[in-house]
Image (cartoon, rainbow, N blue to C red):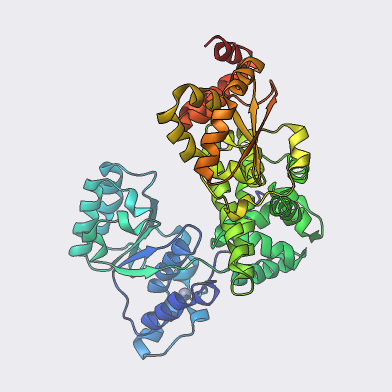
Length: 497
Ligand SMILES: [Zn+2]
């Protein structure tokens, strides 16, 4: 027998089983009992929150013999009694030709819709009410919307419409104003997790609480997603589903791995960052997954510390979230997502000068191993730089273009206290710079309002300095090119210039 997905098996059978949408369930139960149902509903909410399930329950209830009897005698029914699921109308609901259901995302043409809706003008064959459930109604063509509109404005007798949408704003106002709107909430984790545990019990497996919470968090308010995740874990495990099983099955980074990365960034320990990322890569995770998981974890941490800790800690988390969000965007379509992730994290642990100076991972201090181990006292996350190096360079450009060109071909390796360390890829450029260094120190010290020492190093493995002056797309293209050509040709071009 074909395996039936948990989500399909777990569909609510009555209003009492509508998890997380109690406000809708009780309102509809009252309306059903009092026979005050509308002929057109607009069901609005994120995917997996129960829109279609609710539409089906209502459609079924409109024809349920027990419900009709209760309406005639004025008896109030409980949510769990609607629909009854026992009468002949309930039992034949799935096979009845009077219940039309279609997805506007796949039936967009006016012909499709016209064909489906044409039957609305014919009397129901078996049921009391003919029902139309239309999913993703905002996807319908203009003409299709018009034909639905005509039906809703002057409805034939005994016809009901249930229009579901994930994008309320894309539903034409003419439709919105003629329907009774039901707003579906995102289902909270606290509701999803216990429900998953209950479902697991029914399957005769133990879903551990931590595991249930992780799935619930991942589902982001969608019961369908939660059930799909549980289904995947269920298929891979025996008797018990632990947090570890969830992480492994769904290819997630464990919270402890994420916390490791976060604490390494907080400690500004680049070696620890590199180790933590390598560890995460070894589990077969993509850089994007790691970055996205970091964002989720950081957001959770923010919620945990809300009210409890200092604003400083909050700001540190904000900076990290921002950096990861930027990294995720940069990684899209890039051939070097791993480098982007590493550089973004390294940058946060870089010495003070670099963070202020650059906004891109490529401009940050290079991953020169010797330096990584020695830079430990950086306070860059606190943004306590006394002056902006970028602004200084802009001014220098106007005053002494030769000096500017020389300095700009270097990269800020370190900026601690009153010492600035510049890195050159080319010893010739470094030599030239040294000839003009006195002038540079004088200008810089004047700008900074205090004596600044300047040191230089030469390292042919430094990132290309020309990257720092480039626009983001150019920079990315060049990085990709460097990757492809192992930088030799690009380097040559740079040297020839
Ligand atoms: Zn029934």
